Every structure is written in structure tokens, then in C-alpha cells.
Image 1 (cartoon, rainbow, N blue to C red):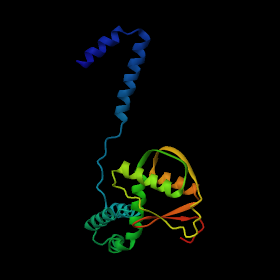
Image 2 (cartoon, rainbow, N blue to C red; image 1 turned 90 degrees about the vertical axis):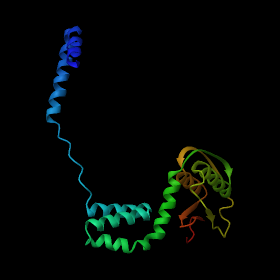
Image 3 (cartoon, rainbow, N blue to C red; image 1 turned 180 degrees about the vertical axis):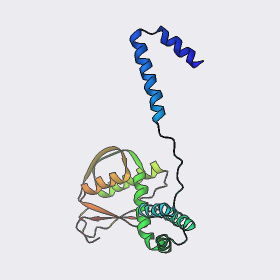
Image 4 (cartoon, one colour; image 1 turned 60 degrees about the vertical axis):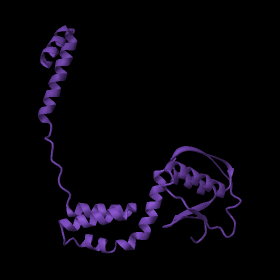
Amino acid sequence: MAVKEYMKALYTLPHWKKIALTSLCGLISLSSLHAKPLQAKKAPTSDDYYKAGITAIAQGNESKARQYFQASLKLDPNNGNAKYQLKNLHLHRGKMSQKARQNKLSSVIIPEVKLTDATLDEALSALTALVDDVSGKKVITNFVVQDPQNTLKTKRITLNVSNLPASAILDFILRSSAAKAQYDQYAIIITPIGTGQ
């Protein structure tokens, strides 16, 4: 049926369009002859699972890392690297939870932030409220400001941005107030730049 319709349409076209259309159809059919056959996906190896476990550690996902290392050992019980990482996974727990907190904050896209001459405390409170609102209180910021010399109290922040990750907004706030953040397991510690923390 489609061939009849094609021939009928081809017959009604002007001569130059017939040549172009038949040339195009010829190229399409030739290219399909040289196309590579679809290759079946190869099954993941023990090493693939091991590498995925290392990536999960870097992303702060302990449960995924554990699953990947166990899958690696299921395929190759003698994989020493996977055994070592699985056995010592608890040693990475602090860094993984810090990275997980940072990733969660990065995953929250804030539609709009407008701050005019705000203090650091006001800016952090506004960011906390926005993160709570956008994430449905699933992402907890828990900012802790450690400023014994009160150097951050005098800093003023003006900011007008939209559609940015909360982590990027925090970076703008910190740069504007000459402060830095350290992602802890349970909080985000804010200190002035130049302090020991």
C-alpha cells in the first residue's frame, strides 16, 4: 500500500523533485545496508560494580556503595578491592554524609531569591525558608554560624537571582559576606574566611 502511494505521489511531482526524492530514498536504503547491527548489552562485570561502588562513595551514597561492592563480590568472591572497600565502608561514613548533604542542597532549585542589604543571618534564614518550601522540608539546611569575633555581623548582602541550586545561592551569600561553609554530617558550619575551620 505504501509503495503505491509513494509511486502515485512521485508521479505527480515535477521532474526535479522526482530526481531529488529518488536520490534521497536511494541514500537511505544504501545507508541501511551499511548500518552496524545492534549489539547486545554486555553484562556488568565485578570490576564494573566495584567502580560503581567507588563512584557511590564519592557521591555520598553509602547504601548504593554497599550494594555495588556486594554485587562485585557475588560475581568475583576474590575481588580484593571490593572486599577492602566493603569492610572499610564505615571509615568513609563521615565524608559520605557530608557529600550527601551537599548533593541534597545542590538538588534543590530555588525559583527566585531577592535580598537587599540583608545580614548574613537574614540571608541564611531566607535560604532556609526557600529550601524548606521547595523541597517540602525534605532537605534540611541546619546552618550554624561560628563567628566569635562578630566579623560577619557587619556584612550586608544584596542578591537577585533565579532558577539556581540552593548550593550556588549559598556560595553567593558566602562570597558576599567573606565567609566559607563546611558541610558537616549534621549541619553546615559557616565561618569567616581566614579562620582555622
